[in-house]
Image (tube, rainbow over all chains, first blue to last red; front, side, top):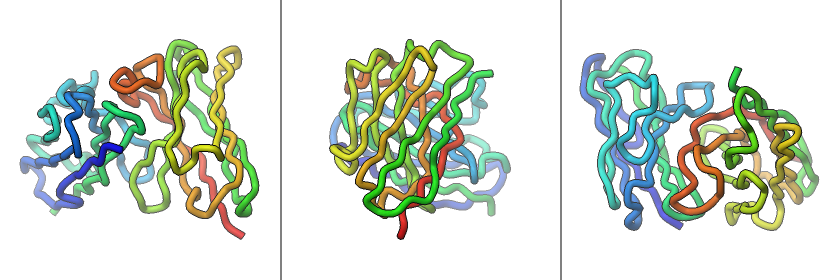
Length: 107
Length: 125
């Protein structure tokens, strides 16, 4: 199975700060990597597909980059509504696997 | 309205069976592969199984292989998960999710672009 290692597991930042989350795959997964946001008590929501494509309607402060085994998810200016857990997910190989999640809080 | 609505979750004893359902609306159900993803209390996301648009392809996580069976009825816009020989470690919120792809094939699967709100399964004596 492809292991997805996300870091950090949690972080706190101030409103307006730049937040960066990394996701490392245990093998080359090309760009078959998606990012999700899960707000407390809600279902996950797709934000970025294929490593860098922002979903329609998702604010432009969110972005993704990377290919191969190393990926980055960035929030350029953290907003209060961004409080959530963020997950990366690969689909280069079955089984589909998710990273362990990054819980983002406000200072 | 485009939505997925799961049902069937409840408290069940270890070793027993349970069938989950997911009703789809607002999109052409038969055009997409569908999946089940679960989340144990306080834990992360775990993919459980997926089924292609025509039921021609399917796949399961090793943790459920041989115990869970996924099926779909395109005429009823419905997805099912038959869960047998349930274990305490199967306790989780079960989400059904739509992907942008039509089959459950590596690199063609796509992203989970629509999710239901989940149905809770608790396995305990």
